[in-house]
Length: 293
Image 1 (cartoon, rainbow, N blue to C red):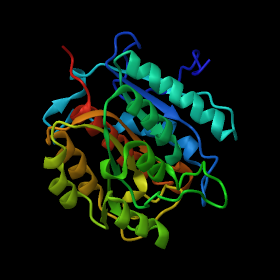
Image 2: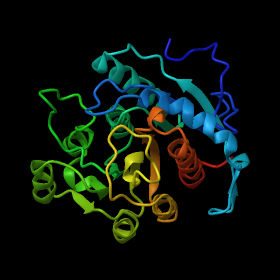
Image 3: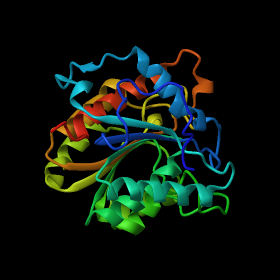
């Protein structure tokens, strides 16, 4: 059993459709086994759902309403705690089912390693997809302290899977010297510090392409998102992150799935982080997701 079928807790706002009647499937991936600093992102998905009760169903940015979408909230996956390899295997299998069933996946992390199996499933289902990665960290390590399954490795894995020329990173302001050397020599696109302006510059070259989008909440400055496992000073504003989402939505790329990761609620008693995260999720679903027929 992948999900708790008897779960009766909070669902994301207006995510009230059954699986069979939904176009978009939202699901939580409560894994934080490989984090290198502060654990707790496994509690992020449910806190994002709880915070969504304060959202309007209408987006003034997009002049659109969640009533125009059919969304199923599957809840959080039941994962074997501490077993990263098996957890990733289960995530990939579920994502493959979603793509095979014609669903649009929206995942809530969890640590950033959870993006890897989703991207594997996306690449198996779609020819030559690209990755848009919005984050404070390069995530280009091959291993961390000898462990290849680490939240510092998913973008390096993506370069191996998709080809580095199909990987686009924005907002990056932290990483090892070797990671930045790899980015410079490999042919991938990396924009340091800023996100919205360099993203707008490259989106025309991606028009018509299939794209997977991953957002690490720590791309935001800790003033906007203190509740995350590896906060990095000098980040972008929540307004700039929203501008990134809206630019992608308006660009003519075909988004095939998305996730938002690394919300760790224990470090944010004011709930700034989960409040920002649920608004980003609303805009991603409205901007990227399929519409009611």
